Length: 117
Image 1 (cartoon, rainbow, N blue to C red):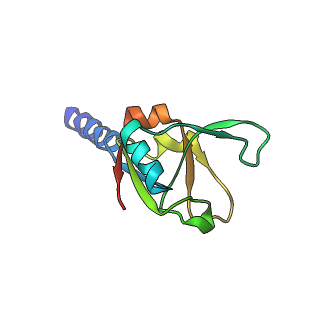
Image 2 (tube, rainbow, N blue to C red):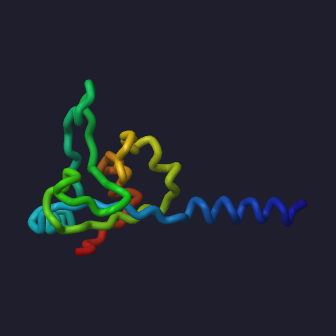
């Protein structure tokens, strides 16, 4: 019985150490500022009735046809599971990609940002 509990704990630790990679596309100039100072929250209603704040990230690099500005890609790696980010996801029926609006403070605490291109 103790071995079984140890295996369950080990599986839980492996899940909590999972890495989730998301992407943010921006201009070269903005990428330099983000890499130097960190992300800053954007604010808007985003076609809803309430004001929301955060940084838009997606499950793949987006282009200008999908609302991205610029062709510099930043990769944000989180040491957490997809479930940990679920409250930040914006689900839209029919989109071929997924998006999250994540507070910059969460990214600073749990994420690692790298310039991909």
